[in-house]
Image 1: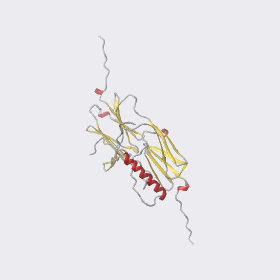
Image 2: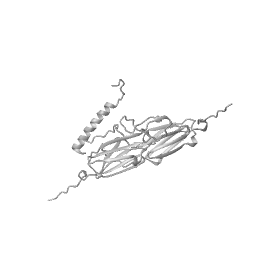
Image 3: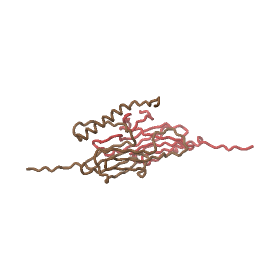
Image 4: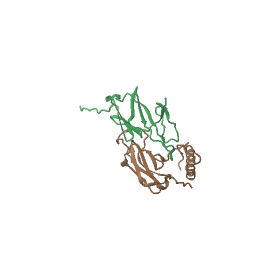
Amino acid sequence: MSILTRWEPFRDLRHEMRRMRRFHRAMDRLFGHLGIDLVELPIAAAAYPPVNVWDDDNFVYAEAELPGLKLSDLEITVTAANQLSLKGKRESAAPPKVEWHRQECGFGAFERTVELPIAVDAGKVEARLENGVLAIKMAKSPAAKPHRIPVKAE
Amino acid sequence: MPEPNAIVTKAAAEAATPEATRGGIHYTPCVDIYESAEEVVLRCDMPGVKPPDVDVRFEKGELSLYGKVQPRPTPPQYLTQEYGVGAFYRAFTIGPEIDAAKIAAEYRDGVLTVHLPKQERMKPKRIAVKTG
């Protein structure tokens, strides 16, 4: 154990928010989007890259900001178990012998797996990387799509 | 006037609130700055900005970087939202050792690179040593 502890004033709060969020997700799974409409609080992403996910009737969309990367630097996988994983490496564009003044943008390898809240068809995934923004479009699996239930009139 | 180098992280919890300028909110992008014998290079992440929407200005010793982000189709509700989408702005004071007339910038894959060449007189020179 180190004597010095990094001062992380937001850690507890963040932890608390994550817990709340998990609870919220669990409630969402139980009740769908019915019921309480909580305002989603954006929280610090523990992993890189941060990801936004949303859906419409037929697709689930995921978007991540990955500046400095090309699509060929990225490995995107969607598994049958609804796991979206992003793996890649950002090279430092600086020549080896320079004097650094600021280094805020990270580089190196990263890997992140996100569990999608809605079942998708792993075979129907499109990805685009444009101006450093990765956009992934995944077709919902037929069971997850809303469908119209015919109502017979007697 | 926001403090020029205040850092607003995109992943928002420690939530430095995005600041309002030019009538909208903006994020402070992360930058890498390094120096070689010839120039100072500044690289700035501006994901989601289209090349014509990058605005680099040098005025009264201040270099300002602005990237307008065209609104992307925003869903009525996110399933997961870990970052915000908005314009980028950051400004730096540039010293007299930089040759302002030769500042050049390029934007590729969401990264803005600004080359700030040093004044000729600031570059290191090797002095020939004569032997007696």
